Length: 157
Image (cartoon, rainbow, N blue to C red; front, side):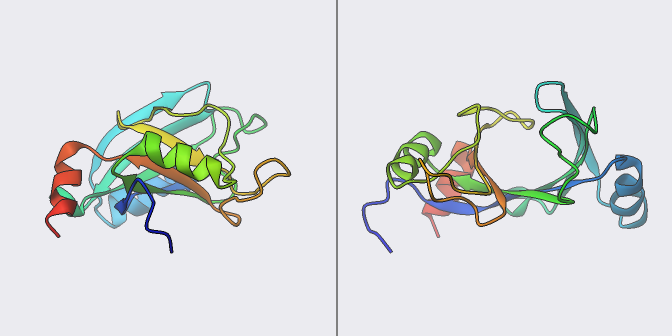
């Protein structure tokens, strides 16, 4: 554990689940389990067509993203693995990326960018490389810039 970390992970922001056809995911999560839908997102560049559902309320809210590929043969393959990625709220995304890169963490191409929910995001690659040997140990990890309300609430804990 290091004390010089210039950022804090504040909590779980999202869980993303992929399938060849998100209709089956919607039937389970939305229709049967009753998780409400907040919206949708489609990006040719990210090869994703997703429904954004929401669990919980307020500071305990977590997105559940149900994703299907626009083109099953293109990358990224958002349906493989089915548990695609987890998203973590971070209080200072740019400081986190810089600090982690200095320590050998590998990020996916694209850098910091606007995500489906309107927050700045960046992804830690599931696997390390020769140049950046630290990856997510098989898990794609999305770092999400927390809005001021989340940062403030975390500071009072």
